[in-house]
Amino acid sequence: MEQPRWFKRVIYIKIFMIIAQVVLEVNGEKQLKDLAEKLKEAGVRHKLWIEQPEDFPTCLATAPYPKSTVAPFVSKLKLCRGT
Image 1 (cartoon, rainbow, N blue to C red):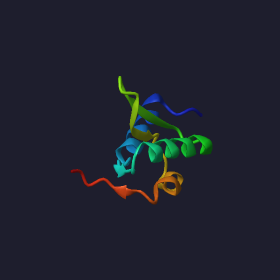
Image 2 (image 1 turned 90 degrees about the vertical axis):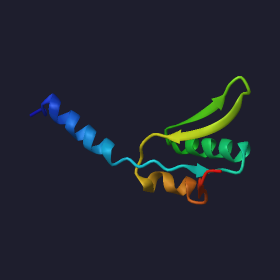
Image 3 (image 1 turned 45 degrees about the vertical axis):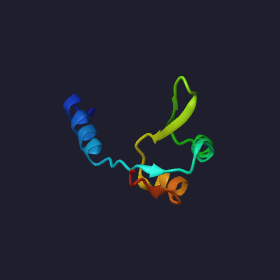
């Protein structure tokens, strides 16, 4: 028996509410690009933001994954404390 449409929405909302956001620091463009390449090779969905018109990578975000999936790639990075 298929679930009603409202049931699927409720499940999605509950999952969305437990997603955590973490901001980590890298040591420069090379480390950011290397991380993006490793994620790509592992099949981890992500987006590398390229600042325009400078054509400079500034940020990387992953799709929502369990911590255990992403942690091996970012475990050595430090939390960003701001400036």
